[in-house]
Amino acid sequence: MKIGVLSFQGGVAEHIHHVKMLKSAAVEIKNSYQLDDIDGIILPGGESTTIGKLLIDTNMMEPLREKILNGLPTWGTCAGMILLANSIENSNEGYLKVMDIKVKRNAYGSQINSFSTEALIPQVSSSKIPLVFIRAPFITAIGSTVKNLCSIGKHVVAAKYKNILVTSFHPELTEDLNFHKYFLSMCR
Ligand code: GLN
Image (cartoon, rainbow, N blue to C red):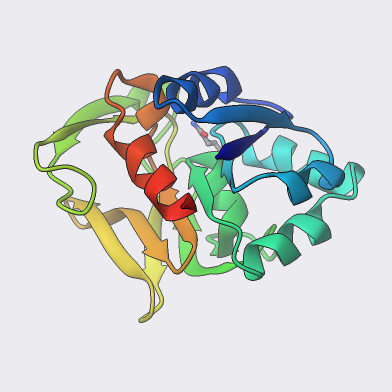
């Protein structure tokens, strides 16, 4: 199995490391031709405006969107979640718009309000897993067909719809491999 990590900017190396720890191949994805050769793709955290701009500049937006709609298993962490959302609070534009969620950017505040916590997500692991939030978005509206995997307080921070997984937080920045294991199980 080969997992691609969109590699314009952000937490690329950390995702590649975690996928390799689970004995799967991981490759950096920088153009649309490479999309034919992978079993799943991770859109990492970083800056959604930057990654979104680079998706346009490299002509990858449409081909990637099509692949995802055709079933390519896809996981967006943090900025990656923003890229996948149908709509973004206080913005008229979205990016890939493949998942019926509305997200709020920097929903917990700025860098200084970054935090970590833990939660039990039964679909992912039988024990609590650490969740790291860095200038994180959360979901403010969720379509009826989208499954809520985890809420912290009142806010949905992980969700799944068909082949698409999104998390506000960064499992790649913890030692815990359970979330990557879960995504790999979606890619089989
Ligand atoms: N705040 C960033 C954005 O809006 C996301 C932060 C992250 O990916 N850690 O794109």
